[in-house]
Each structure stands twice: as C-alpha cells, then as structure tokens.
Image 1 (cartoon, rainbow, N blue to C red):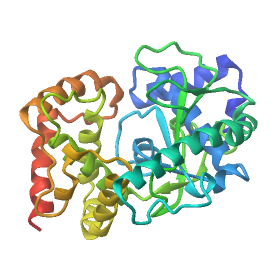
Image 2: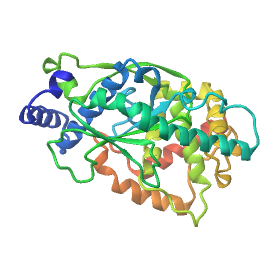
Image 3: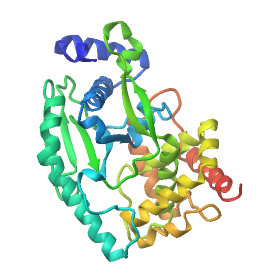
Image 4: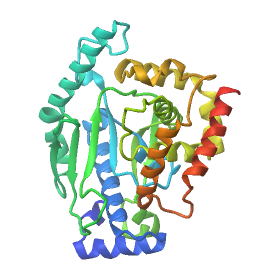
Length: 333
C-alpha cells in the first residue's frame, strides 16, 4: 500500500478509475477513500505504540474485515484501551448511577486530553507522510474524532473529503481477533501493490451483531417526540446483511452471553431510560420499529442508496420483513 500511496496523483486516479470500472461503481471517490481508509489502518496497526492501544470495530469492520456488507462506511471506529485514561477505576465495577455517570464523564474527559496530547504526535508521525490531521472538537464529537485529510483527487458529492477516526474508551475490548484488510484497488490490481494487505485487531463480528440488534431495540422504543438520527437506517441494513450469513447468525445466536454483555455496557455507559434495555433479552428483544420510526428510517434509507454498491441492494421492505423473522427467531428459539 505504501507504494501506491507514493504514486503520482495521475497514477492513483488511473488505478482508482480502473478499479471502479471493474466493480461497476460509478463513484471513483469511493475507491479512492477506501484505499486511504485501508492505508490508515495499516499505519495504525503497524505502529509500535498505537497498535497496542486500539481495536477496530463498527460498520467499516463489517465491510473491510469480514466482508459482510457492501455499504461504504467512511468512519473508522476505534476502541481505546481505557487503562490509558484512568489508573484508579475499573469502569465495569458496580456503582450507583450517579457514580457511574461521573466515571463516564471522567473517562471521556481524560480521553480527550490523551488523544490531543499523547496520541496526536504518534498519529501525525504514522500518517503525516501523506495526510494532514486535526481534531474535530465540535459540541457533538467533543474531541474524540481525529480527521485524516488524505490527498484526494476526486471532489465527491456526499462523501466527506477526510477519514474520521472515532476514538473512545467506553466500548468493549473483547472479543477481538486478528484479521486481514485489503483495499478494493489491491483486490483487482494486486500486481501494483508490494503490500496489498495489512493485519488489524478487530472486534469479532458476533459482538457487532448484538451491538446492531440493541441499536434496533433502542429505536423500537424511541418516543414519537424524539427525532431519529440521520443515516441510522444503516444499522437496519447491516443487521439484515449479517443475518443473511447463515454461519454468522448461527454463531451469534449461540453466544447470547454477548447480548447480555452488550446490554450491560449500554446501561452503564450509554443509558437512555426510554431505550428499555432491560427488555433487550431473548423473549422481548425488538428489532422492528413502530410506524413513526419506520417512516423516518425508510426516507433515511432511500437517501443513503449511493453508499450501497454491489449486485444486491435490498429494499427497505425486504429488510424489515427479514428483521421481523429474525426477531421471532431470537425471541422464540
């Protein structure tokens, strides 16, 4: 990958254009950004310090590590080892809601400082040969997002011209394992790469299955006066695609302890009374949302169609029908 990163802009454009044509993708910008996402992961997990602190998770891992979805995901979710931001507390210890809230706030505040003061020099050394970095510190992201501005050739509509590294300590480190990541350009033109693959540590897909399921349970309980976040329909698509993999679904359904662990995490670190996480168990888990959420998600899904590629783009009706069957399967094994 380093060889291609050092190509001229024209050479990279030709490679990414040919890859897009091979894949039947209209946007060369998707292929370009995919390359820089993979290159970024390579640098992070080959860095002698960063590789020991971070675990790859989330939607991008579903496409790039496990090949379970054909949705382009722009962000890189990274779990930061919480031991780097506190020496005094185990976040999983039993404590009152008020005490837990204070611990959560302390961990997040410490993480912001750690990212800015300790990690940024390492990140700039790892990625600065080709990219510019800054911290996105607006009210929403609060200093947990590092923007990696790669040398883009394309000026896409609807695709951010930078990679977002979303780094936080309030997520599970386990279970994880080592996996291979390959950019689309290397899959189609491996002869141009001296290092077509890189190895990353990623959260196992079974845990992500239950992470997605509990997000859908949350949305199924969302009050009518609470607006749904944009691009949240991706979670419905992701779980639909994961459940379509018979082997993964069977493995996830055998590992209900992961569901219990995910629920415990959300109650501790992302509490929402209206989410009704106590019912996110076999027998009462909800995947299909009520009408007011369903309508919003349908519109949201229609708006994100350009981010889904490949030969199969399920309709939202197909997704909801399948998730209804999965809900029954989970609740009545």
